[in-house]
Image (cartoon, one colour):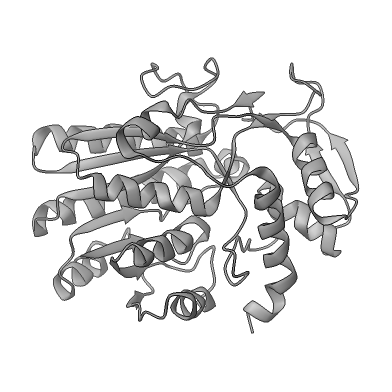
Length: 334
């Protein structure tokens, strides 16, 4: 089976390509490389031993997308491509709405036109807004605190409506939490363009000397140590969750949380990294960021029950794998 992976050179997309190939699928990748590197495709090929058709396109481009659908006999689409930084979305809301919503519409309409009935959408726990934790798929969604989260909520509603109007069109909405870590080979991982927006790559860059100090945003949240709590999940566990959703072949619209079901504070993650690597992380407390919430972690029973999926890798493994990739980073991109 051939699966189109949009954003397939990005962090989660690249790891999902490996998980798909390991599960016996063939992949086609489309990515505009706005937040990723071309070398990632070569590293995926090296890890898997498989050739991967790659198209450097923007998936908001209807003609370019339909060209891929005509050229390849596709059986499904996993849609990762999109802008994803919460802080940037507050500064550039129109850019986020335009990119994230149009790309989803273009791909969904192409699926209908070409008879592709399996669509997996990369959603986010941000759609829950400031809800009670743990977040459960049956919750009423509250207004999110940032435009990034709103684009995910809007795209979910669009896909639900399209699926309702087209009963053969099956959609999996995967609301995942905070991916960290890297492939165990150390050849692919999170590659931020410029200073990292996410916590783990910032920690690893401080550890290796690329950044001076880790900035911890907020230390007065109502949490165990005052720092924000998130559900950190290994990126390969997350990737395998996408494969599980694709292979389940459940009809209609299915919604799943992908996380560990456990909350970890920022300081707890820093300490886990220090214990895993023996490296002390210098940090400073700064004001919390607009759009951030105090705590976010998942109820994962539905994914366990219906997909047979559960996160297997622990926090120390996440830290070790992220650090291995950081140490290999310069060699990986040569």
